[in-house]
Structures are given as structure tokens and as C-alpha cells.
Image (cartoon, rainbow, N blue to C red; front, side, top):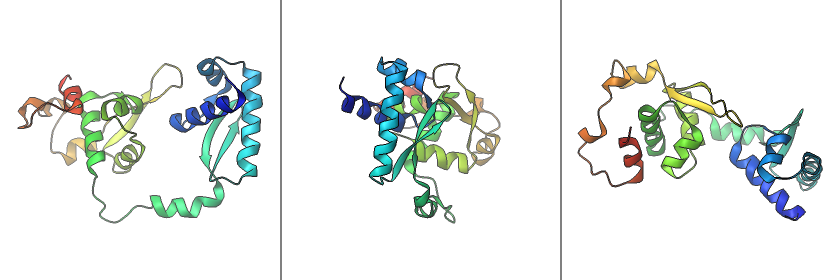
Length: 185
């Protein structure tokens, strides 16, 4: 793998992972020595700074993360500002259903079922206190585990998760992958 391919792979990994990653983790994933990874990351940081991109790579001890630049905070704040009476999107509802039926579950597992990223949906569900972080998996990267909250039970007027309707009770055909994955509870 040439240097540009390594940079491209690191950028993709940092973007997709969203949490800080250690040099060791990057080294293992890319099968490249830690010294080379450090050198490539240093180059990337300089390149991102020089080209004044909207994103940057930040270093925290031996961990690296892709982040937006602080000077764009006001724009992002407007985008993510809570909106009055904002409902729940179809994507968030699908994500919530997956979490409710498959919990505890990681973001990656949700994305595998849905086939798309779910960062915004999870953020919305956390904001509305329908889901919560319930810990971290004991594996590389220690991904967050999500589950529903007491507020979820309250909003949907159910006393426990055992009272969730069985997917087969719905008058829908089970032909989509999402429904099949939920159905195989």
C-alpha cells in the first residue's frame, strides 16, 4: 500500500469510527507499523491544516479522531440546535425499533441491520431520552451499547420490554431485511 492509500484508509477509518482510535488499533487494522502510522498521521494533520478543510484530525495522547474545526462551531450549532416540537423521523423510528427489539446493541450492529449510518437517529433518540448508553463492549474500540430507557416505556405506554408486541402481530409482510432481523429476536 502506498502512502496515499494509507492516508485514504486512515481517513476512512477515522470517519467511520467517529470515536478516538489508538495508533495501536490503526496499526493492527492496516497491518502497518506504529511508527509509520504516526508519520502518516502527522502528515495528514499538516495537510488538513494547510488546506483549511472543514475537518481536522485531533491527537489526544496516542489516540486520533476526525473532528470538525472549531471555527465552524456556529454553523454546526445552528444545524444541531433543538427545534421546537420536532417529531421523530422514519429513520429514528426504525432505529428505535431495532434497539427496542435487539438490545443491548451497538451502533455498528444497528447500521448492519439498517444498511445505512444512524448517527443522527441515535443522537435524536438520546436527546429525546428514548435510548441510553448502557455501557461498552469489551472488544477493540470498546463500542457503546445502546438500550431503551424508562422514558421509552412511558412514551409507548408499556410496563416492560416483555410487553413489546411480537413482530408477527403486525399486519405487515416480513420481506424486508430489517423486519427479518427484528423478527429473529
